[in-house]
Length: 303
Image (cartoon, rainbow, N blue to C red):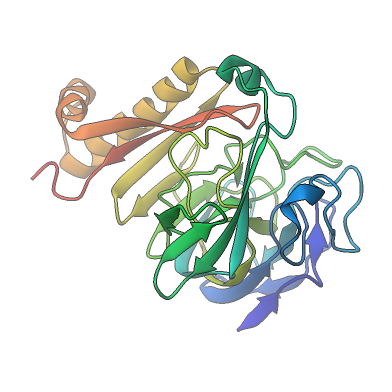
């Protein structure tokens, strides 16, 4: 099993970026990732934004990403299947509120700042902050994606149909994510570890943490797909992205209607009726320039 770690860091997507490793379809890769803000170790909560950074960080860096991983023989137009075998967070993480000016922070009417430093216990599955609050952990990667086909560097912030900063809390260990491949070789990069996050990621951050070990099995498959789809412990998940939640919601639902029609062999109108009874529409995130919604069909919801 090949390892991709802090020897293979970048803060952007770029189809010209040389691969860190090349694997065959069906091979498992082990990743170790930095905390999204490039801090290699816990830091004084009063030090934001003067936190320690990895030497590879620059002023224009986005999320700290590990990769990219080239999948031998992958072609643009195929689909990358990412089977999430394991996700093990590090021992610390941080959550921020109102540490920078944003439209949603203004809408919340915030005046002061909050920085919560978390001590994580992956074995017990809990995190505890400096104020004594304890939460359950549900670790996942906020960013799993490939570069757009257009040449040049692309921001890590907005999610895209080829993945990236999806911030979908359902993509835990035991899930499989399918993404349309935009470039030959796929060139998958990952990062933005989250020890726990609520739907919406409403402060702009989850428990941002390093990941000690993430094992992903990467395969290429051939079937038409226009955006991210996953099968998770919560059920089937279809994701929609857009400039507004209305647009994102309709895209997530349209993908779910197609999926229900295929799974149960029914016309689209019947798929819509079944979805209205059995599918939940959720807000994935509101904080990444492009917003996201996901539709969830729970296991056994339609029998």
